[in-house]
Amino acid sequence: MSGTSDEGACVSLTLSFEPLAEQIASLRSAISDLCAPHIAAADELSRLLLASHEMLENIVKYSAGGAAEFQLALERADHGLLIRLRTKNRALPERLRDTKQRLDALAAAADPVAHYDEMIRESAGRRDGSGLGLARILAESEMTLRYQIESEVLTIIAEALISGRGRP
View 1 (cartoon, helix red, strand yellow):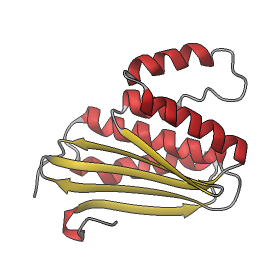
View 2 (cartoon, rainbow, N blue to C red):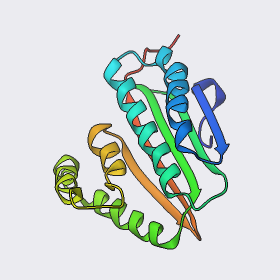
View 3 (cartoon, rainbow, N blue to C red):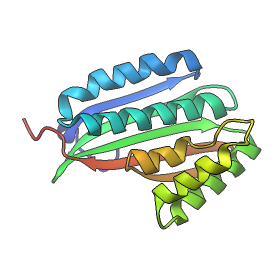
């Protein structure tokens, strides 16, 4: 991880895999097992697991084939723990356009929860997925989101500062 030292890392996990829906539950369980000893509050762990699940589900649903990457980092910070989740996968051009539009709208929203509520109402008639996963991360997990698109590769990063258990 750039900008961090190994002594500040509580957990660092990088996976490169061909994403399948059957993998999400076991990966979420492994993330819980790795992170639970470092996160004091149950709601903070729950938010991390929700965000991890949504990001894993996103790469399963929207990858254009081949290997995808999932990274998780818990790093000690001055006032707690920094959580960083990062996904990277190839996506079809129409999926990239849709994702860019959704993430730009999320970034521009003055109230992420109100924006999420509006998206829930709008998703009622959709037949091709709800499109709510990334908005859910922002609204329910209280994480920031940013993204990068290079050619056909989408990278999404979610981050949050949480209290953690303190330094050992």
